[in-house]
Image 1 (cartoon, rainbow, N blue to C red):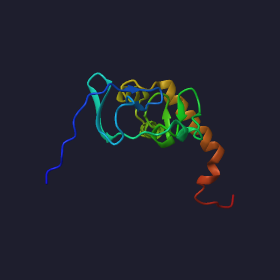
Image 2 (image 1 turned 135 degrees about the horizontal axis):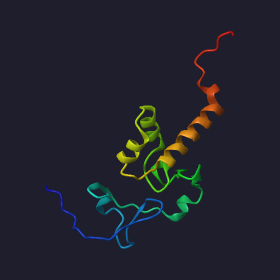
Image 3 (image 1 turned 45 degrees about the horizontal axis):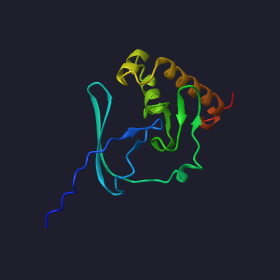
Image 4 (image 1 turned 60 degrees about the vertical axis):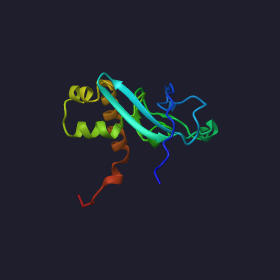
Length: 145
């Protein structure tokens, strides 16, 4: 038996400061939606998913952690992984590019200017400080001096 196609209705959505797509309240829970996000000229991300709603109280115990001017950890964005403020760009991805010795200008270009060299510098500095504070956790072997 062929599947019954769901009716298609166009809705205007808003992307909030928290990077969560907000649909109007009349979009039914469980409705299949397709979202196209234009992040920069010529760059589109298309996602298809079912509408879910979470009560604002679900976030009441979750706290957004601001680690600097550019870096945040927000449980509502990318499962709380470190990202650059206002983006879904993982700090770990940028640090990997820095470790690969890519020029910072090229890193900024590769992300469409969504992050800055200052943001990269903050990520490197926070990583350096974290490593210096916790280097003992990474000791492979101790040998007599």
